[in-house]
Image 1 (cartoon, rainbow, N blue to C red):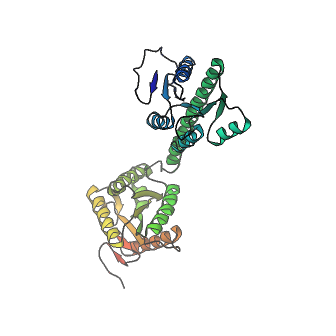
Image 2: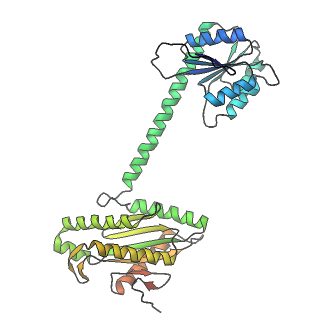
Length: 345
């Protein structure tokens, strides 16, 4: 169908097409020639033709409808020519690409050069033979289709790589982030916290007497226990950026962005309470009949000297202190205090 910028015409019935719709904007000040070009473009397979007689109408239609191709006369009424229009069209499509074919009675080398420099993709000299115009339209349509398919393939590849990375960074037993993913996320959160000057908390957790659990109940039941603990950790990580990871064996790690020392202790107590509520049985624990957890906490506002290795060392030292204090508790490296609220000199 053919539309003008001032008075859109009703769409006539048209035969079904096998390919995606293809819309062409014709910018030509002579009404008779514009109508003739529109008819020839439709005959070449365009499903819609927009018409504009000048620069302002062309820009308006382009922004509103985003055609698939523009056929642009160089000489236009008013203060702007086709070169100016082409430059404005390119500015209006950041990241995209619309084929622009210049149409002019000028056929000098300088005219062609100016057209390409202004953002054009091809240059036709008037009068244009219908067979040549049809060939250009079909070629640009093929390029449009190929580009769209390339974009689709790129997006599909990106999603596939994203899924692959997610699979590579997920522990197959527990479904938590694995050590590889943990290392990547911790490094990233240190950079974010350093830039935003916000506190970052790291916790290392260890299941108390888990070797005795496996020795008594067997490794199959031990795996089931690890899955149950992972569900507890997932449930306690309620904020979008909180991360629970399986650090290795029966060790787990928690990355808690924007969490100060006091908040870390509150989080640790909540985790201990939730695990106690779940009451996962332990068949041979000196701590009692249910599974318990010990953890080490470190919290800092990262600076240029902060590293993932340093945070892990502090959390590991705090974990050792929690075990030395009797297990079934979390110990803060910076506060030198555990969740049983026993202060140490």
